[in-house]
Image (tube, rainbow, N blue to C red):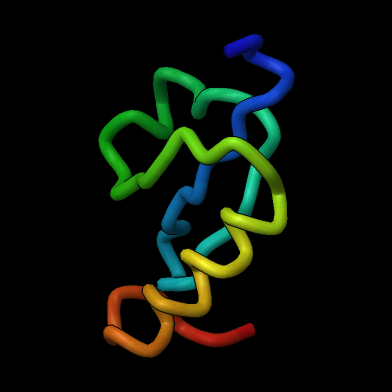
Length: 59
């Protein structure tokens, strides 16, 4: 799998989760993160699940 084909979910300090198309930076490594996912659509679906599970705040 190519790095450009990987998507990640990173939880921000305010509780919102963002989807990024690259591995999180070193300073983000201490934050909660999920992935890699094969597509942006899969990452979006997983973020919805994280919101429903109470791990992320809706935007």
